[in-house]
Length: 299
Image 1 (cartoon, rainbow, N blue to C red):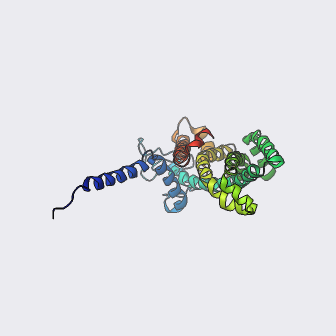
Image 2 (cartoon, rainbow, N blue to C red):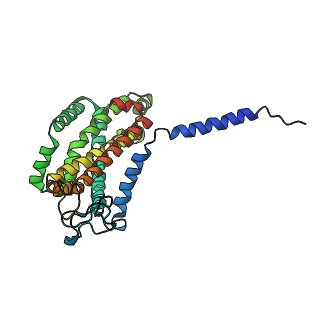
Image 3 (cartoon, rainbow, N blue to C red):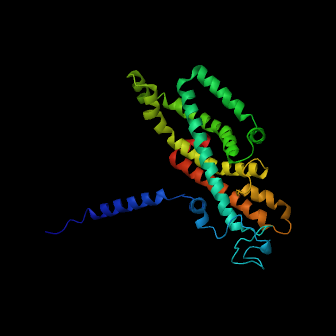
């Protein structure tokens, strides 16, 4: 009996369709941005294991060594040294660790507090909603740098002060966006049926509302990584954030600003690190936004 080959084109077409769908999943992926963020994570987690020198090691016989691509550069200091002979690459790696730790704590606390407040505001409405939204508006009207000055005077400069300032500044973003999501979700049939069935408010929050806002929180958090790193660098540059002997990209900028004319790499390279990290964070956040919920473009 001759073999029936009529189904072969259909099977081939199905395989091609699956292959095209797999390719579409990777279309628009910001590979360069993800690689930059991955490099920052490796530097932050690896720390001393990937650092070629002690970031605070002073070598006065090797001050202002230029990067390797400039005449006079040395392979022992690929990105050069600063006014005290400290290796810039090692300090960038140490600064990445500080930036990542502060960003992680600040975003987790901001997202947790703002997300919970937004859920309460959107779900209960009425007086609670009005009071919380007025508090959000008041908080958003306070300049973050002014808030940093006040808290630095009250608590003293340091990483803890930076985290507190960032949390007080950014929790309002989460609260407003999550409130809008909850206003839409609580009108859904499954939430109404749960309330009619006598399901407790805590169970509704845990089972029906919280899982549906996780994507929103993830996208917003990814978009804020760069902003938090830039804000931390700004506070450290002004002397309100990370202090010596800890290493921060903002501190590196502050230390090198007086040497910009004859040792440009000491201030340019930390600035480039901040710029690339912020761009990578924003592009990755835009990609996640489009991947999870294109409606967030209007948020």
